[in-house]
Structure formats: C-alpha cells, structure tokens
Image 1 (cartoon, rainbow, N blue to C red):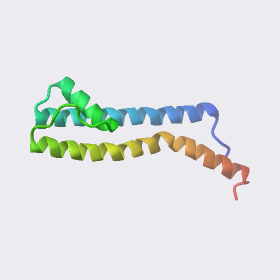
Image 2: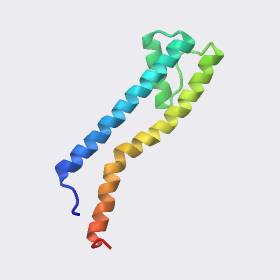
Image 3: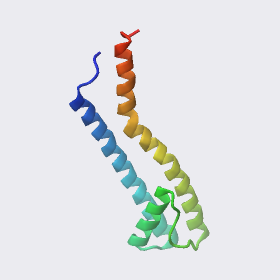
Length: 109
C-alpha cells in the first residue's frame, strides 16, 4: 500500500500525542492520590511532588512516613518506565511512516 497521506499521518500523530497526555494526566492523579493518602499532603503539595517525581527531579517536601517513602520509590520507578512507553507511543507513527516508506521504495520485497 502507498504511504498514508500527510493529513492522515498528522491525525494519527495527534491521536497518539493525545493518548500520551491522557496517560500522563492519569499518572499525575495517581501520584497526587498517593502523596495525599500516605503523607497527608494537600492537593497543591501533592501535585508538585508528583510532578517533580514524574519529571525525574525528586520530591520537594520531605517524606515523613515509611509508607510515603515506599510509595515515592515505587512511583518514581513507575514514572521512569512510563516515560519510555509514552515516547514509544508518540513516536510510533513516525517510525511506522519511515519504515513503510523504505518498504515502498524497495518495491515491497
């Protein structure tokens, strides 16, 4: 089959970016719930700590409970792996288009 039209490629790429954003939002909400539940943080403190862990910077507020420390460690591992999964999701249409273009130029062999 021929390579998809540019507008179809853009729509696929935007769909994957939107899916990645939804996953990031869900992961942020999980982090906020964990910090609120285990450390008793308010919504703003939970948000900034979850966002900092997700970005790889580390928590802002000192963690006081063992449960909070375990949660933060597991959440950091989860977010570290999530970054690669989202990058793969967002870049999948680009890689597919490049590989498809090579296959089409090769005559489908």
